Length: 329
Ligand SMILES: C[S@@+](CC[C@H](N)C(=O)[O-])C[C@H]1O[C@@H](n2cnc3c(N)ncnc32)[C@H](O)[C@@H]1O
Image 1 (cartoon, rainbow, N blue to C red):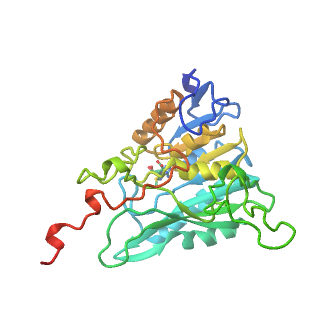
Image 2: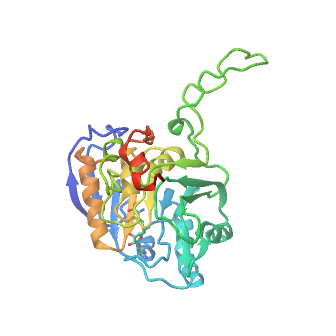
Image 3: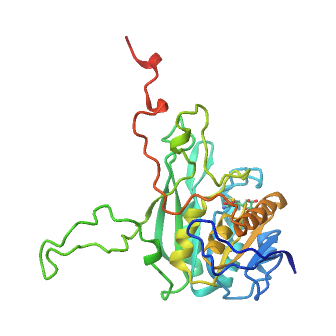
C-alpha cells in the first residue's frame, strides 16, 4: 500500500530526468507495478518479498562492523558469516546480466586493518558473479591517523551476473584533459584522437565525501559543508551512485539498496528515471530517506551536481597560509 503520494513535476534540479517522474508514489513493500519502495525492517525479511531475477542493479554500502550506532561489532568471521545468507538472496533477486556494486572500506580491530573488499571478493565469486571493476573511490578529507597512513579511499566492487551485462559508457563520460590531442600517424593523422563526448571516467573516482567549497575556506572550524549531509554517520554521495545507475541500468529498471540508510541510492535512481527499492532497519533513517525523496520530487533537495569539479585552493585563502607560530624566526 502506498503511504504517500506526491503529484509534483520535478523541474529544478541539475541533471534530473524531468519526464519520467511526474507522479511519485512511495510503497512500503515491493509491488511490481510501483516505481519506488521504502521498506522498514531487516533486509533478510524484506528480500523474501522480492521475486527472483527482478533487480538490474544492487548498489549499497553495507555495515562495516565498526560498532556504529546501527550495528553490534562482532568478530570478522561472524560478520562475514552473517552476510552470507543476505548475499545469496541478493543473487537470487538479481536479473541475469544485472550488476552488484558493493561499496566498502576497512574493518579495523585493535589497530589492524581488514580490507572488506578482499574479504567479500571470495563470497561473491562463490555465488558465480564476475568482477568487472574494483573501483577506487578517492576523497581528499577524513580522519587523521597517527599510527598508520590516513585512509583516503574506499572501494566499489562491481560484479555482474553473467557476461551479457549493461554498460552504458556515454552517459558517464567525463571531459577529456586534452581534447585537442591529435592522431600523429595513420589514416586519421591530424584528426582529434579523443571522443567528443569525453573520456571513460576510469576506475579511480574522485568524488567528494565532504565538501570544502570556496566560500567556506575563510571560516575556521567549518569542516564539512557537503550539501547532502544528514545525521547519518556513513552516507555516500548521490553522485557516486548516479554513475553506477547511468552506466549499469536502463530507464525504468529496478535499482535496489538493501542497506539504504537515508536513501542516497534511491535519490540517484529516481533522478534518472529508474525504479528503486530501499530497505533500512532504522526508522529514523528511513524517515529521512522518505523526506529526501519528497524534497527531491518537489525540487527542494540540495544535491551536489554530478561532475561538478572539486574546488582547488588558489593559495590565497587564509587556511592555506602557514600559521605565523610555525614560522621560525
Ligand atoms: C553504511 S550505512 C548505508 C548508508 C547509505 N549508503 C546512505 O547513503 O545513507 C548501512 C545502513 O544499513 C542499515 N542496516 C544495517 N543492518 C541492516 C539490516 N540487517 N537490515 C536493514 N538495514 C540494515 C544501517 O541502519 C545503516 O543505515
